[in-house]
Image (cartoon, rainbow, N blue to C red; front, side, top):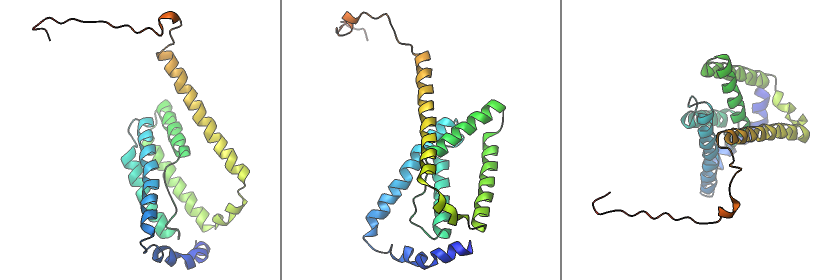
Amino acid sequence: MILDIKRKARHYLSDYTDAISLQCLASFLFLYCACMSPVITFGGLLGEATEGRVSAIESLFGASMTGIAYSLFAGQPLTILGSTGPVLVFEKILFKFCKEYGLSYLSLRTCIGLWTAFFCLLLVATDASSLVCYITRFTEEAFAALICIIFIYEALEKLIHLGVHYPVNKHNDLQKLTQYWQVSVSYSVGRH
């Protein structure tokens, strides 16, 4: 952590002093919208996926607290943080796992969060951020491909689910497909 601070210390003050300009107002507003939009969107999707256990309010609060902590301690306050597709996929899989095995979703989620925090502190203590330069484009693309495959699988799963509940009517008369039928209804006086 000390080595990380030494690398970023010379830029830390300028990140704040450079921001005291009126030219930065548009950037602030853009970053605010860029950070809040996905948090709220993915929060809504997360609420749907977890049956309301974690939703937009919790995502907004978590992103705000994480953003404040990250900007104060990471030495780079202008980094954009927010929910992403992989987080949503992970939460869906975790919730489904908890439902199938009768586990408490929020308790397991808390344990995962604490273990993640422990490993993040361990990575900071061992200066593992210096190893980021060894992550190649292949690693990034492989991870992106995995996420794409998961999203495509879920879309096809929903499509099949819709096909079961709303089957296609295969016995339509194609001649009547483009005809417009009008039913006239006459009301007598005094009828509503």
